[in-house]
Amino acid sequence: MRRRSKRRHSPGGGGGGGGGWGEEEEEVKAKVLRPLRRSSSQGEEPEKTPPPPPPPPSSTRRYHHHKTYASPNHKTYGSEETPSPGSGVRRNHHHKTYERRAPISKRLEPGQHGGAAGPGGAEGRAGSIAEADRSLPRNNHKRENGFPDGATTTTTTNGDVSKHSQPPLGNAQTTTNSSAQPRSSHARSRRSSSRSRSTSSRGHGRKSGSCEDDDEGHMVYDTGLVLRERFEVVSSLGEGAFAKVVRCIDRHNGRDVALKIIKNIDRYREAARSEVEVLEEIRRLDDDDRFACVKMLEWFDHHGHVCIVFELLGLSTFDFLKHNDFLPFTVEQIRHMAFQVVKAVCFLHRNKLTHTDLKPENILFVCSDYQMEHNAKMRRDERTLRSLDVKVVDFGNAIFDHEHHTSVVSTRHYRAPEVILDLGWNQACDVWSMGCILMEFYLGLMMFQVHTRTHDSKEHLAMMERILGPIPPHLLNKTKKQHYVHAERLDWDENGSKGRYVRKNCKPLKHYMQSKSMEHEQLFDLIRSMMEYDVNRRITMEEALWHPFFTPLRKDTRK
Image (cartoon, rainbow, N blue to C red; front, side):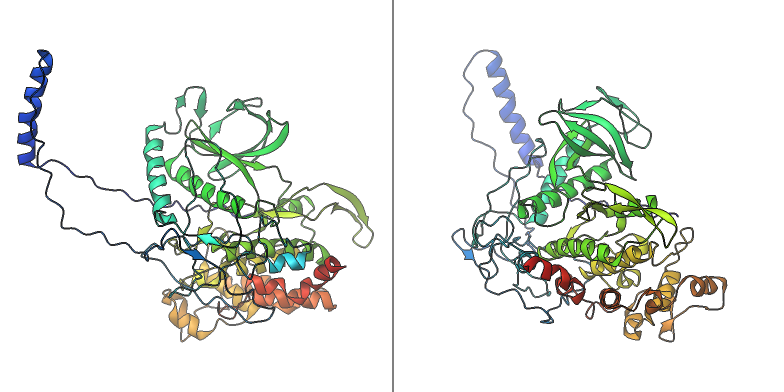
């Protein structure tokens, strides 16, 4: 089966201008500097000359797009409590793009909502999965655009060192700093400086010192290569469009790690530094590893290649399906894996971060060891996992709510309809992707098997309608892709070759159910709630945590 190739979006950067001497100032400068040089050569004391007048102030004013920062002594407290299950709290903050960058809002410290301990909190730490769900860090303050907002913070990152200095996680109160920059400008300045450093480094296809790149910009390496006199390459784990992943031994502690080596190309290097920022923020917020997000151990630059060190995980859920002849997971296995992923993505959403690229390839088993068991009904041997612990990986396309949102995100087969129709997107696009993933776990195959050669978005929409019903007219009326629409309906020929392909390969959602048992009914109800066309009606990740499908896990934990 063909799989999807990753798409990577390179973040933009800004530049700054500088001042200069005018004509009069140049004359003054020449008169002043010539006697100084002559006097110095003769060993005489240079004459004291009045400094040249400063250049006239510019009449251009700089307007900041963010609100005034609070004073250093100002403190912010979380006042609202976590909404109860079924409270109907939804995020109606879909948008298209941001023309202005707002300051990064504070990712909450432990206990900020109602005093319960969040990640890293020392008191009241949840002792069960259900309690941990309630203690997810959140921020209930609202801005005018509908997004949650809070205090500003800065993350200290030094591009010349491999480790990130982690500030200690404090109590419920957070103090704003009037001198702190918003993340957007702070990140932009750091990205600009890193760009200036990277442009001086070599391009791909050339040698620099002991490092050599291939024609595509990948680093050429052999088994036994040691990076930074610490990480020894043992084997290759995989290769993507912009990076290779190798297995290494950390000589400092003998631990096996995964090392992601980014291509030595400017746009990929900039994207990698953005990923590092997100990973550092996740590490700071979840220092006790309660949420299923991959942990970055450190990062460094090796001759223009950004190298990110991760904990070593097992196979991806897609690779396990592939090695197991695409035999679907059982409902009970899906329940355990889905709960971990939903909880992890809910953690991201509460901290105003959208993953944007959820798919089975980006959900990895912590340990993919298995045992072979014979399935008498299917008359074949099957691989049975010994552990169902998973983690979400690949934050290269993750984006904070306040940052610019590109018009297209997600791998095609898991792309939400609002993205295809160019209606603007928000965190709800992750929920749609999660619904597609659950169906793929259940079926062993992709839900929307769009032709990979044509990449026809209209065909993708037609598949959605075949499985989920018609797209609401009010969404079709708002789309910029009016060539997809005719008479408030999708302009689609059901009798053409593509129409026949859709009818053959797709059927209504309920027809995919393999049993009418309660657990199957609950799973499909969750999937249908995640795949609502209208983002205002689509379930949120927080609401999904309290869906009846996950009730057995909460009951087992309480026992």
